[in-house]
Image (cartoon, rainbow, N blue to C red; front, top):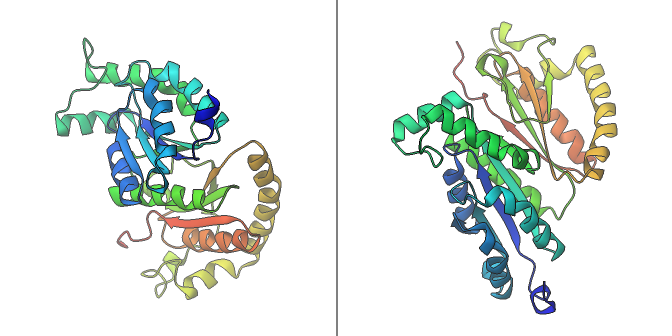
Length: 297
């Protein structure tokens, strides 16, 4: 890299990648709404020159989102070297890898009638399997993995916003705590999953059933118990050990999922409580609740 190139300004780069049909276009649109200059399907070999031009163009091009995938057949081979080169030049990079189950991807392709980029000579399931194998190494090195199998467009945009907010804190570990209900399916892209179904359930208290863990009386019912207090003390000690280790490893983002049966009471109250306690320690933390708005049966 020339001395002239190294003098260019620092560019904030978010790479949007992953399985075809997993929601990458939605993320790119969300990033564009957040002020990122977005380009989809730029050849990987041209990324360094493009970033250099962005760094020279001033403030308007300091935030860039790139959609990269196997439409560029050299992507998986070239990207690790390209990323290393860009980071050596001081640019900030986060890779968001999008994924979904095979059955969900098949359904989405069937609904849209789009051709899979690796579909030539293969049926759809074989093409998805080939793409998953080709991208497996990049998935392992992604900064954030987003499984969109059970994620709405609204929730996906929330995840994108969380990533952007974490980058704006100026470094360090950005933590997202997500509550969910096991009966609606697990959160498959979490780094840590905690099951709090051992705690008494406000659902069985008639006056609390229609409310959620965001309400003070429900939160009090969940938190003001000896077993909950002990759980939070032990969890706090575990996180005091784990979080510095994650940060030392170079992790920028961490997702902690807390699950109860329906995702409306216990998990919500604990997610909010844990988020407050971690914020009090100076950490960048956001709480999200996947199932809190589901109707009560």
